[in-house]
Image 1 (cartoon, rainbow, N blue to C red):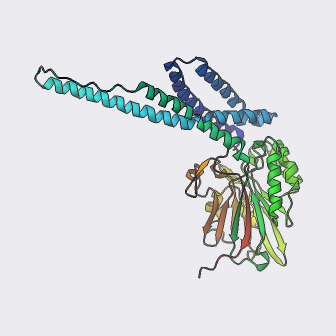
Image 2: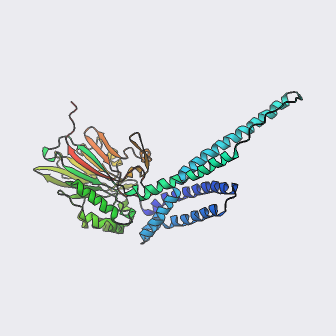
Image 3: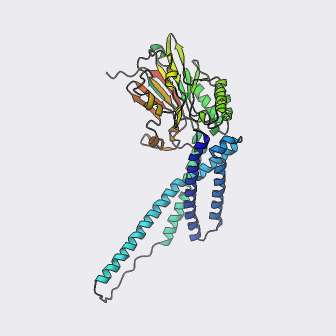
Length: 426
């Protein structure tokens, strides 16, 4: 998959954005005209919508892959998402209102029709009745409710702004025991940090990566594993995080695998990216493995090239070639769908598979201790730990962003695993 194909999804987003803008701003314009406010309040919104639309096309993935000024493109991309996404909630409220109004209108027309039919079937009787007129609606109350509703419409923009500029880099550290059956005593308590989906192009500066490095240093891991998606579309994006990646160290090494976005470029650019990753001191494994020795015991670290979303670069046989199945094996595979398709119940020698890719959906809500996200609708394994007998899959929520440059209730993740024996349930 290349930026040309990725642009298809961007066009869908922009098209939906135009429809949202048209619907919401049309209702906003009616509100302004109803109360004889200045035309400025709706004309200015239409002008901003036009400018955002132009910026959206400027920052499309296709142009982003050709444009050397990534920071400008990224700026317009942020503005576009900040302008479009919050309107979803506003549009839902307006749509409910219009549906209720439409149902009321249809009901009133049907009622009038039945009244006409009944009046024709009855003899005409002249009666003098004192009819109590219904109380006219309280116009002031209705106007107040409408004004409050449009004021509250700004809330989604506040939430989105907060998710974009504050919580987007509010890195959360997850601590997990990682059970491995038959784990040698020499490996008990070994500490492994996983980060994933750096997406260097999503950072305006190196500061977020500096914070990540400081957090990892404080965790004092024995091994660091990075499960793909170093950049969005260009190898040059790696320059943003390269100085901090170079400072990442662990006693038993820093290892990485390739993600889908690391392939969204030409073959030459892909080779440059791999060279850049290796130049930072990271042991990049591409359908290959490494054996780590600890006090006379061994731990197998393997990694496949990305397989998923139309990409089939992974060669699991090559990745596991030469490994002794008697030792624990941790596999890095960027896309979690690889677990069900190739590993789970098929290759029992893989004790643990570490993935990323989903970002946890980036946007969600916390309800009764559960994270709800659109990613749950797309991926069977979308975030956190999954078990099947003695095999384990962990899906990291990622630390960078792609698409919407925003994080709401799905914090960017740094994971610390402690290797341990499974609990004896017998």
